[in-house]
Length: 213
Figure 1 (spheres, one colour):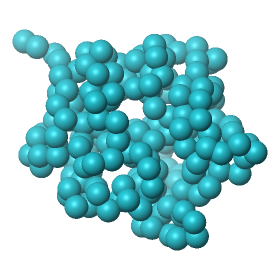
Figure 2 (figure 1 turned 90 degrees about the horizontal axis):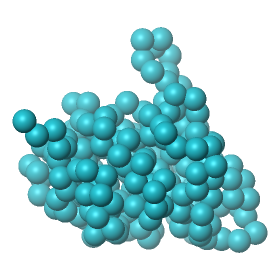
Figure 3 (figure 1 turned 60 degrees about the vertical axis):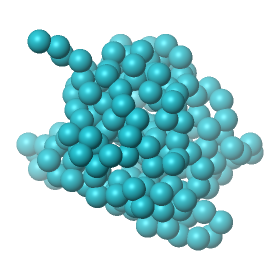
């Protein structure tokens, strides 16, 4: 019996879907690029990419019913992973050029401009992953990942009060100031960087995610 996991890369018009497809296939998944509702709902894992503006990504996602798919999957404990702006839209709001846009509100917090001498943050950077991270398992502390972004989440406020529930694991990076680089929260995982563009380190990270599906 095959143990290959089916992963849908949700194609809502924003994101490097072909790069994600190749990287996930390299990591051992059976990958399909689609916005088909049933296929996205029934896959073992759903990957939500994202590039460009927060508001535009949210508009495209809603038009493709992706907001409903993400919510329904998570309600049933079905794995979802967001990448880059696909991570940012999981937060409550994004603020770009003074304009506030509602996100999916899976996590509290705002996506706001990076305060750094050089923006966008473009290139390779290390991260500070917490103990017990499954996403970064098997990766050295000095592993580098590829970032391209001008906005980020600077504060993490979600806390778990139920001792029976595992607290979210938050990974940080720094470019001018600390920002959230990745989150592991039950069935919902996300990265600000692009694992599909991060070479062997990114491949290991995607392999880790697929291994949990």
